[in-house]
Length: 84
Image (cartoon, rainbow, N blue to C red):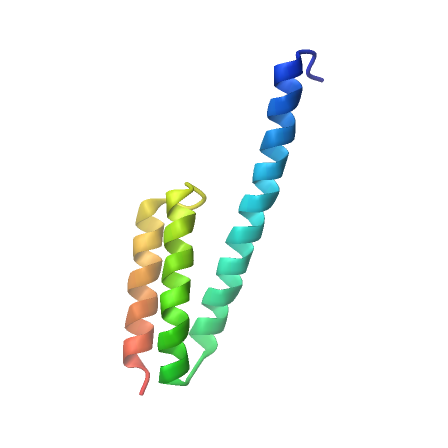
């Protein structure tokens, strides 16, 4: 157990951040899953812009790696372009 005041604060902060990061990550993963299941091109194009912005935010906050974000965006864009 932490004995210093600053160490206790760091524990509180890290728990808050972990919960927030898990929420953002899970929300993004669910939206990606929903986008991949979509067959309507117009709806998929609308969703794609929101998903890409969410993935960029995750990469900016170091929740996911920059390369993973790039791969996700590339694959999702290809998926949406294949829809007719």
